[in-house]
Image (cartoon, rainbow, N blue to C red; front, top):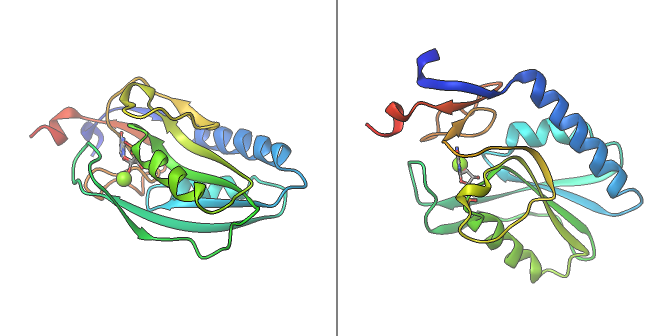
Length: 178
Ligand code: IMP
Ligand code: MG
């Protein structure tokens, strides 16, 4: 399995540092506020689970699922598959995702929440890949920023594989270019 990856870019130890840092920051920023943390299924799952355990203020959590018709390394048309169940009116919202690449997903989610009379909207992502942007978007809480490449692990998939890895690695081009 090792040569499926070019290299590991976020180790288990670095993930721990990231979730501690972001959890602490979110706890400070939203002290005394009504916060709902919403995870994007399925990619955000491992990151979300670790992150919320580092948040020390009372919060609510929920999940939403969007699918973009793709099996490969680019996002395409977006379809909303599962909505949240919590009423978010007048509440502060943080959307958690594995990665912000083109920014299309986050822009779609932001437009949806704009219709829901929320108090504020921010995003938290494990990885920011600004070089991939097609629509402007700036996640406030970022684990790490990468230049490019296709990454897998800790929620991130290639064709539904590799989500269970406890680290993030750059997938070898020979896996997705064959
Ligand atoms: P965006 O809509 O292009 O910003 O991309 C968001 C979604 O595309 C993420 O939630 C991922 O599911 C997927 N994605 C983008 N880049 C990568 C990557 O390098 N590895 C795995 N999934 C990715
Ligand atoms: Mg995905």
